[in-house]
Image 1 (cartoon, one colour):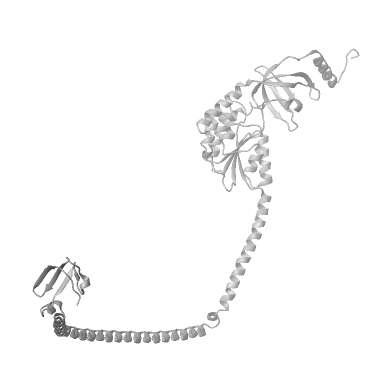
Image 2 (spheres, helix red, strand yellow):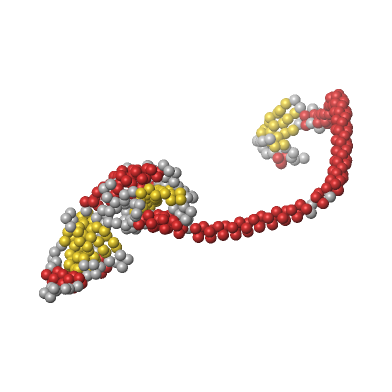
Length: 443
């Protein structure tokens, strides 16, 4: 033992780290691989594994280098990285510290995921119209997950805290590996026939490969055809599977899925207390309203003395009856008076028409006599005027030996009205004499 050297494990790890960092220079070398188990820490650092078909290595990319990236790093992405080898001494693990990264295409598994996603999307398996509405009250659920999975404990502890009266039935299933899809399908079909209000299909976080069983096409079609409302809670917030897209609701974690299907008992109790207070206030208002109505009814004369109330109403009714009879009598009198007026008017009109007819019958005779008298009177006047006219007529004067002489239709009244050689026309009672003026002599 004296020739043997004893050293601590930390010394060995430190020695390995020293040798690697001094002898293995990766400057100018781009390492190709596919990203797996990607974790984006809240500090901004990225932790993941870089793998190919034959090997895998843990990697870290600190936030100062992450901020220089011009693309979004995703699970299953094929990349080229540059950096340095480091040994994480606390665990003795080999680690690649990444300083640069660029895309080298998507991994085969991720490409298969995208192909299935697009095919199922076109076929309508992710349509929002097909998704079932969340039941108003969920009291009985079925949980599909691994029997010893941490996700199951998360669900049960969450339900116990929030709504311990929930009835929970476990349908154990494989949640990783090639046989997981068939196992999940069997458990889902069985749970769908048991009358649960909702089903939870849950699993904790894992790598893209670990969760790939939840991208199985037959599993997606089975979930699509379920009759029961189903909630997925697979992986963490950054993990998205096809199972999440086809389920009626997607929760980011198993705990969130349990919260989605349960009430918070403390919130419910608070609501019950508030509803109780509101109900008490509303009932008080209603009762007070009915009390006021009751007091009004109690003070009503009918309830105080029904007999007196009825007698009073009877008296009023009799008074109304008397008033109506009196009003009716007045109306009848008015109607009789109108009838009398009508009859009298008809009689008067008849008498007027009769008198008018009699008067009209003697008018033609009177008119004829009057016309004859008028004509006789006018005839006498005409004869008188004719006699006067004849007496004063110039022709009558001529018949007595007088004549009328004219020169150029102008009556000659003086010798000065004519001159020698004028043609003079003389009118006598039986004709006209034309002569020429030889001379004029004043006498």
